[in-house]
Image (cartoon, rainbow, N blue to C red):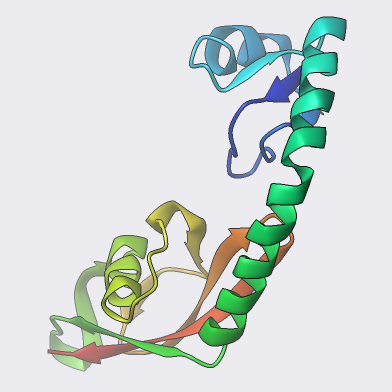
Length: 147
């Protein structure tokens, strides 16, 4: 079944993408949740018109994302965590904690746009990928320190 996405869905696609999914996933989850519509001719025409109207806005959004990526790529985020013996953390560092540190630095980025590479369960330096735009992704260094 071909559908048109109405929102960005991690691992599936971006808004206005036409993708193929299994029938049950489309009919029973994506369409009832309002995340997609069936890719028939009227919906395709509406999608094309929406893409055409949003094209100039997307260029500005992309330029803003590129400028933010330039600021973020040299940034090292320090995340504090309670530490036990051998430098192990109680629990794990999550994207919510990384988003809070970014907010303190003046960057308002949704936690769902942040992907940690591997689980962070010990003190050290790790990498987080931030998806600012469909064409702009940036890796940020995350340093975990004990409190």
